[in-house]
Length: 488
Image (cartoon, rainbow, N blue to C red; front, side, top):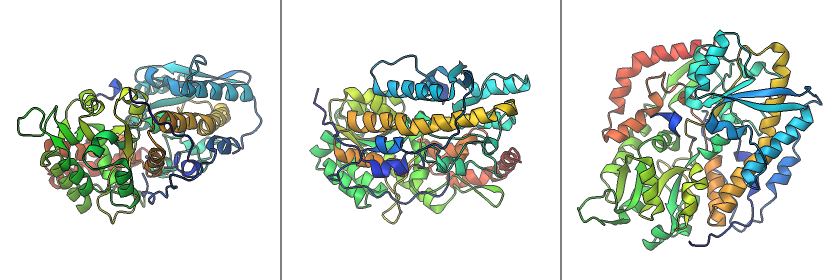
């Protein structure tokens, strides 16, 4: 296996600002205006020490103890690692969670515990109906938020003391965008490690692209110059192609310039274009997906996928990733989560780029996290005399995660252990700085799959989005009124 080049330093300045403010049967495996384009430090810049800088930031919590009380998190087996691990094992990400918990438990004389279920978003409704006191918070997929919210099972986080959403460990973009009529039922912060892991980017095979005249330095330069656009992606895709099976068309098994798996990564395109699916203004939730820019972007992506030699649509996620790992796909959209598993054994060097802009006039590069990342609710059955306990523990868990756990996952795992060079680390900073959240994903299923319309249109290869939205206008309007009523 090729020896990987390890990044020697950490790029702190942007990271400190970006990590928190700015990952279909989902059980099988953030929205306000987009931020401006990130100012990324030069590759030779001497990095600061982000972990030390973070450790010095006070959480301003009171000196309280809780006599060994359990802080119970209702969650799934697959997401339990965010809240507790059994022991130290020498793996830095595992040990960062263990040490975080030890620090908080010792400080507040409390115990962090998990209550496991396959469907926490349903289970909490049963607990509430039975007036059962079974947990302090609930963790579940973002896209399932409508299930407990619709049943009025959650408290408004703005009523919980000690939760300071202005602090860097809270996801400002997500929480402001999810506050409707002054109420926030599902909160996101750095306790949600999956919000980092499930962030999407364009991964590229550095060895394969360089064979066709696109060195990593060239591609990075295109990004820094603001010229990484949909048209540029198509230009690269059509220039990298070998018809290995000699059937005269771009398909499975060929060397491809661009390929995608048709599911979650496609949901990013609307955000990447700087657009929104819904907006909340003056007490009303509006559908804003139907803009000329979105329609035109859909045309461009359809043309890229279906009419470009060197581009292909895979149906199976694992197979698509395997083709990238095998060195037969130059560019493919994946999550940072893939760095921890499948890509570890990739022979070719790889790196990441942001999703391309619509055009050079677009201000910045944007992305989002898959709608399966963790969001947190507090059950209405929570006794009021435990509000302080929940507020203090949640603030502490998110603060300590920002100080020690995120650096372990983000800096060490992504930048140092798996990154190929220093500029890759800059790319990750830029991608994270442009990460935004879209409120509609919390109600995606309820809203007639509104957040997934772009995905479905692309999969069909036909741009009928305008007519689809027109046909759905009346029913979506009524549903959005019901969503707003959930927050009254």
